[in-house]
Image 1 (cartoon, rainbow, N blue to C red):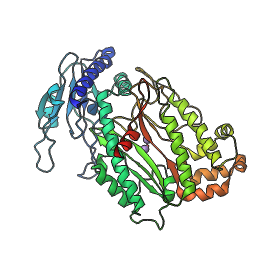
Image 2 (tube, rainbow, N blue to C red):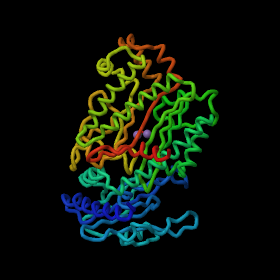
Image 3 (cartoon, rainbow, N blue to C red):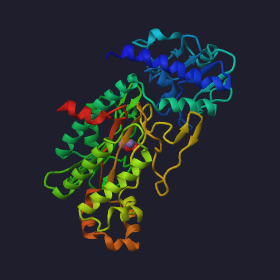
Image 4 (cartoon, rainbow, N blue to C red):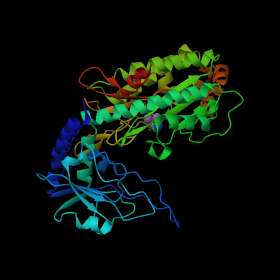
Length: 437
Ligand code: GLY
Ligand code: MN
Ligand code: MN
């Protein structure tokens, strides 16, 4: 289906949702600032601009610093679009495309002119606080933010179309990265191959790519890029996404070099387990329960591969699996790679607590149709955590010689973006890879 009708539906629903978010506080208008890039300390340079995700929820405009969306119940939405007079920088292009007809657009030349375009009355302002926007009262009323975040958890068909495309771009780039790994490129070389295939520069990606050869796979957020290849590339973990109109994909794959059968077998087991978890992204499934289930299944994988001698139950209970899998199973994804409301209890806020002993889980909600989550189990050989494990009585039930053999491979993570539907889940990432074959 073309984007235009999907966008029209998306916007109509967004307007209704915004009305609902404004009503309890008696607000007349919702004003959403795109924001402006923060400046570097004592410098005339700015950090890269990332538009407020609430602004991007309304329009596919990622390069619009200083612009505003104005929603007034019952009125056509308004875009106050800042096109400064500036011969130093590229000025944001005049709005065009399938969404433009749905807005009254006022083009302004300065921040002050933009403020003059905003309506008076009781205004709920959603704006990044940094740098502060002069002339605007207190921003981000919690009740309105809670309501908007709750609504963002459910993606419209329009949003899913954009996330499908973000996954297609990511999958294409992952393929190029795998080829570069197999050709013996450095982490830096692989990263350049990734960017070229994605057609995006670092600043456009939804997060800093993790391109890790060998032991580097054990650093969960390894964002360094070695410029020279190692003497031998045994393994490759890449966690990298792509953007589409402000929506993210977040994809991880792990590869073994030819001839490294033991590590490949472990990858295959994590991959099979991951597919099983992705298959459980169904309405009514508690995400926290799915995370705990993943610990049990991965304990079975550790046992099957001779790394531990404990039963799966004892391994989870003794915290052994947490040494090999020290992060959560995944998180909501959408306009932000770690999307909002992963713990939210209701439209009115509140928090669903994490299970005890799992502080890094980013999602405790019960899945509903329209939610998109990542499913990203892993197994790692992290020196710091293995050292702690070695000092505990349970160490007697671990095959340390085998751990030592696998340590040079760093770790494994496999990550897909999965849509909860009313029926079978839709795996955006596997679908995108399959389309490349
Ligand atoms: N790439 C960050 C994450 O997987 O959550
Ligand atoms: Mn992720
Ligand atoms: Mn990731």
